[in-house]
Image (cartoon, rainbow, N blue to C red; front, side, top):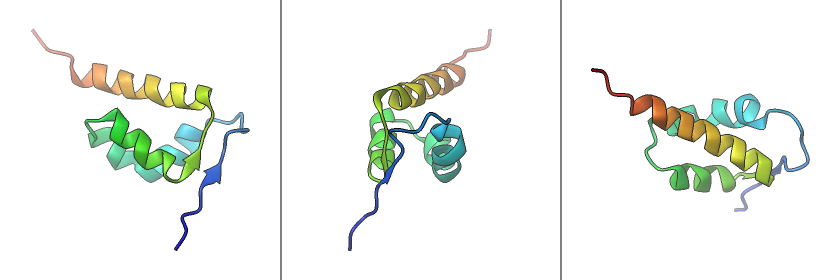
Length: 71
């Protein structure tokens, strides 16, 4: 059995919110390790460096929202 990897490395569209997030929303929202999330995504998708940076920025934004402490 082979796993098909989808190559979006040449795409200029928002691959994260258009394709990846709908598939991996649970892993993104409730995951606590970016490395595990990136490993899961990379198992099925080929992305370029700016796309990975975009995903990391949104992961960090999610983490910062979850870490807000109320006074």
